[in-house]
Length: 86
Image (cartoon, rainbow, N blue to C red; front, top):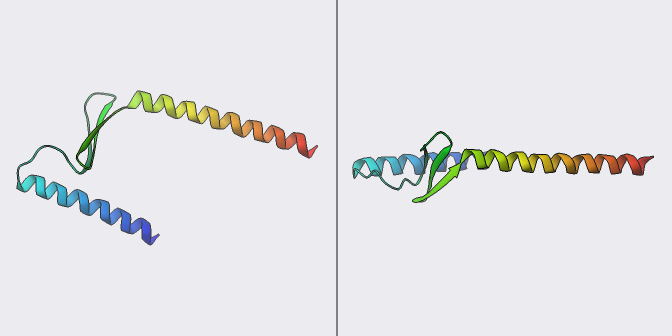
């Protein structure tokens, strides 16, 4: 629990110091941590000054694909357990 609290405090500290520094020097570019929505499904994520672009539709498609594979795996394991217990 304390590690989680320390991590949250550290992230909040980094974001607040970065925002203060950027406001003080009137810098609008390259946040340390943050995100902004560009279009309906495209997000721009800032991590350590780098910009990452993420398409929400692709993330949802990948999530559904992984979830389906896990469901199939769980079903296969349950069927094999039923087979071995009989």
